[in-house]
Length: 153
Image (cartoon, rainbow, N blue to C red):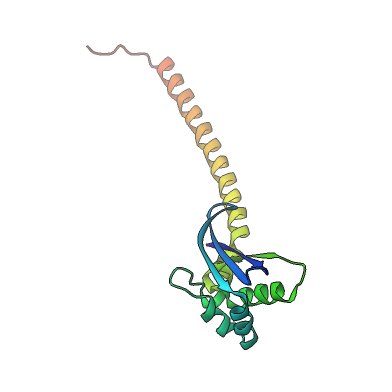
C-alpha cells in the first residue's frame, strides 16, 4: 500500500500537524489519521534520533510503522530546519520495504511483456484452429456432395 504523509508547521501555535493518507485507488489518497504535536517536543525527539521521533509521533490513532522512520525523520528535520517552509509531504510505498515487494517490482515489467507474448501465441493458435475448422467443414461438405444420402425418418 502507498501512504502519503503531510507535516504542517504552525509557528504561531507552536504546533506540528501530521496527516497520514492511504491510497484507496491509483493515485487517489484519503485521510486516515491526523495528529497535532507540540513543536518543541517533536524537535527535541528529532535531535535524539529516528527511533525517539517515531516513539513521539505514535499515538493511539497515529502509529507509523518503524520501517517508515527514516523518511519521516528526514521530512520532520527538513521542515523544522526551514524558516520559510510551512508544510512538507512524502510518499511511502510499503512494497519498497519488503523483499516480496522488491521482487514484485523487478518482475512487473517482464510479466507484462510475457503476457503480450502469450497473447500473440494464443491468437496464432486461434487462427490455426479456425483455419482447421474451416478445412474440416469444407471436407465434410465435399463428402456429402460425393455421397448424397437421404436421412431416415
